Length: 567
Image 1 (cartoon, rainbow, N blue to C red):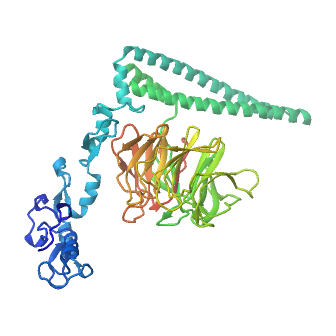
Image 2: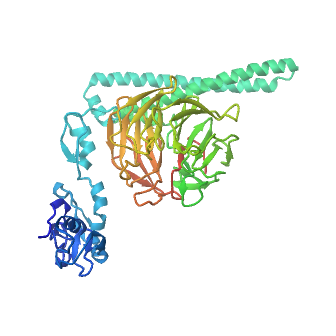
Image 3: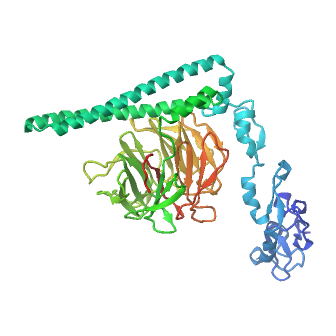
């Protein structure tokens, strides 16, 4: 008797199809509509691949219908049958949970992966309720009796604020004090600018004798430096006031008098999104190419190309210069002065001591740190953390600082407050890791943090407030479109809506609370030129932005300072 497989190995239940299916498309073993059809060598009897392979393993090497000799290697794919079935309309695996969709059989797996009716568990502590994936965020943040109110959930904070008159009065007082301080800082800023102009005037008027000129120029230079330092401090404080003010305004969106104040404050400070630069990577055109996305034009513009190929490199911005560091089979560094138009790339006068790719670079205060990566000279993953020296001697561009507990490449690294968070990556054995390290550059010490929910490598990571958002990548088995948020103090994981596409080797930036993800490679091995974005604390799903001019993965991306026209 032919082997009868278990239900989960069988073909498709006929009741799932939108239209009746001819009996010639049934598996001769499980009697369901055939799945991944195979046929015997001589008489072309049709079976599900799983059914016939299990039959041959359990019942012997013969066809269950014609009894001809048959082995797994002699099975032929029934391509014509598979092609026909692939166009049949079939219901979702989660139809019993409410999904009304019918999709082509060939699209079923992709639909099921992204289906909003898939069962998931609430992540709130003490709640084990199973809910539909599309309802997860609303359940965890609004409906669950065990929910906690996160700091960025302005709606619930606003509801609590309206229920407490005393708390509202306290916020009004705080808002008044912030407004007063902001006006004081604005006046101080004007005064400092006036002093700076007067200092420059004094320098131009010094013409009496050489000793007086030198003395007064030194005094004026010192005064200008102090003024610039004060201006930097004032600008920083104004940005902090802006963030605090909009946070309070978010809590009080239903109060009419606050709406009037919001419009007046928005006129006092700069707002908007910074333009985005992307360069290099493995792409359809030259690996030296670069382009900029203009929010004003809603379009990508090509700019001057780099001097060398930079595939799998890293980047950082320091003193108004964008640096691109290393890459596959590459030791060179290139710079771009983002305040000097037209934008022109220049090779840095010194090279790295070894070919380096799959690494990360971050700016911590005045230090530039190079973390891990692949040493192309020694053919091994690196556990080094080094400081990049871009001033002084050019013969020693790297200064070794310390060793990580284990090597890492294709990982993520983000500076949060006074620490560097290092996520996942490939270990010494080239397997994906789920570990998270907290690195203190002041003491050169490491702290093991709660791990990621699964191994992860080749992903993108950006900072949002005191959290890190990790996007896409590879978990050791499949490409991902998942988005998780990691709380840097506790290691708590929050699952955000998935991206529209699976992306390996993508890059991401954040501007004005909007995360923008660019390029990468999908699970079909295709290089992507698509771009999508997500507004933190207000979006419920990802949306597409205009595509890049070229498809690319393993590229670098940075946001450019606001207020300048780069294209």
